[in-house]
View 1 (spheres, rainbow over the protein chains, first blue to last red):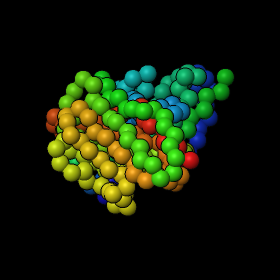
View 2: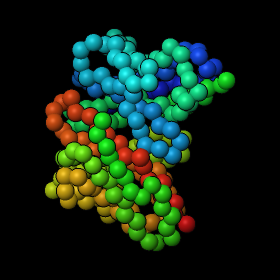
View 3: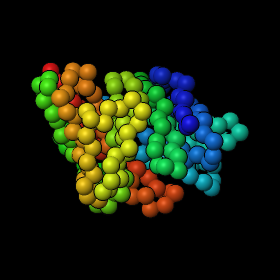
View 4: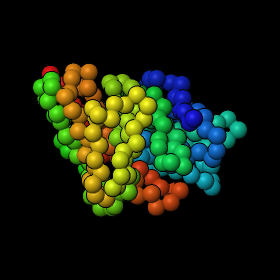
Length: 112
Length: 117
């Protein structure tokens, strides 16, 4: 069975500072990995995804993530956060049957 | 990216009534749609997977007679919460996938906030 762990429930970061959100997954085969962002009361927006190839993935809004098979991790990073980046972030792993398993999410608060 | 529209975005209903939520893929044909439920401050939990023209596959613990799913066309899936009770109040989100290959991606609707009073 596939699963995702997001160790950090809540992160507070200053505007302009760097951000890193952790994600660890458990999956028996090559994983399909995703990061989504959710604003309050809204659906999910895909930030980036990893299926294969280059382990450093570039996404929208200046985000990137690095797939590390040896650590079963897919951490999300942004060099300089903006106030608009305050939201809930979900890491997800997908399987061949196209179902997604989500982590519990990390709430990001950006302080001025 | 592709657009998935969910309607309504918010609904309040009386206990004991039924509520229907629609999920439409606007610019692509979705052979598979997924329904998720999200409790406050929690992650999304997959409820069921629906394939066009066939019966939905429900996850363990999800009552199929309570959460009726219909996927009658390649652009529309509906979730009906029957005989709703306050504990059914939640945020329901659908996603749709073309299943064009292993590199498929699921696109999410904006969600429906259901409140049962």
